[in-house]
Image (spheres, rainbow, N blue to C red):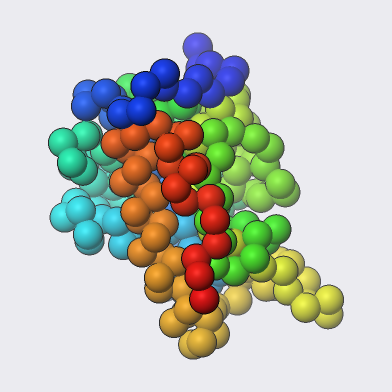
Amino acid sequence: MLPKRLRLLPHPVNPPNNRRVIVGLGNPGVEYAVTRHNVGQRVVARAAVEWSIPLRDNGLTQRGVGRIHGHPVVLALPATFMNMSGEAVEELVTAHDVQARDVIVVHDDLDLPSGCLRIRPGGGTGGHNGLRSIVMALGTEAFVRLKIGIGRPAPEVSPADYVLAPFTPAEWEDLQPVLARAVEGLACLVTHDVQEAMNRFNRRLPA
């Protein structure tokens, strides 16, 4: 049975044999690749390149297995649409024999200003369809989240249209150091505990 609450590791370094599954949320297809809703996928795709972990089609995800600083990790991009993300995550949890607390979900967040990262050891869905689907599939909210702030749209723009729109060229350029820092945050989550990662990365990147 999956745990009802995430239990933080009692020591600062993650055990070397404790596998983490990192999932970057988004929608499949080239038309969604650089939309705001797919920023979680962009982070995990960047991590795959930096960590030399090739991603290949496997069931409901593109995934790859490797190590970062000696720690085993699975990187995955769901091939499902955002509101069906839970199916892909449930498949990953079963295939790699991990618990919800070993899952790290990277996703966009409307309630954070652009450029902000937030790591949380659990919590609600905040109206995010991908998170809602994962909670329903796993039966728990006790998975780690790495949130990427995308800011709120102008009052005349609906949130649904905003998240499915591509980043502007200026926004995309500004996003690159944020993506780099998010990959560093993932490495910290894999090798250390959640509290250490929160202490180091839960602040806005300087302009």
